[in-house]
Length: 447
Image (cartoon, rainbow, N blue to C red; front, top):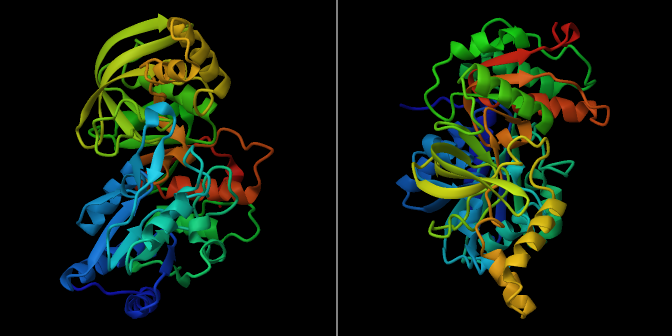
């Protein structure tokens, strides 16, 4: 079936054709597109064109969840940026990930959800974005297409998304020939969606003043916390992507997680079979047998079996069998305190405390370096840092899609600028594929 493109999509395709024909050694295309502008349709079309012309193309995304979404719309496998550009080098000795050599030639690398790709964002010396650029352009005649939504939240700790900034890209990689296009025209199929209408109004706002929601009643519903359980009970809960509740803070997420666990699922124990979890820090220890050797920050897991709880070294742990999105099972040890601690992950001071407690087991080893290596190889020091995944922060939701999204108003922190708050709202709205529920939002937010 032929696709009827908007004028904006047609212009973008013409520029992509020019980009494809360009013989410049290091070329990069930044394709920006807001919600509902047909960005995924365009990328899917480009992938099919490349395959029909027998040209090589590799698809990547910042998270496993985003790679899954990309695979489904592009109809070919996508992998994570980490898996494509790094290999594991003595991670247990603290060396972590090393950038791989690009052995491809004449290949277009496409990165979706590029707004999430930051600098100094991978918990190691070096930067994910800069490593990505270095990896792609060390290959022979390789090119890069960065695709993302500039309306979304930038990476944590950054004021904008460097991967969608031609200025940043050209300043880092001065030999780069850059192409850029922004899709802004909403496609006809999306124009009737209240989710897209409200998201578009929010990202077009120049005053950043309420009202923010002009269309409610169909796929955007105003509701209260009192009605939350009634709405949740009406949703068919079948997979990890059925629903999510999005919050501004980890503390709010922890409160909602307990409410949902207790009242919706009837969970009484600390952790039970069927629980949904989200990893909150990269872990190399438990996935050493996996191709990438990494359980990534933001990865979703489902509890298949609770083995036992354990207290040692002044910490509480839980041993569980979990399953990832690919159906792969792993037996892991997890920290209990990160699950509902109100902070993003285990504080550095607590990790140091654990290190020194475990060190007491190895006083017989007089060589300091060998003792360090022994500690780094213990399962307890490498316990998985997790949280319940029913309610999460908007940053953690990026790259994912859920059928039903509940957005918690909570409270607006004084330190948060209105522009940042609108980016947060826009990001939350655009995670939903079917319906959005606005929880406890004040009257002045609505027209």
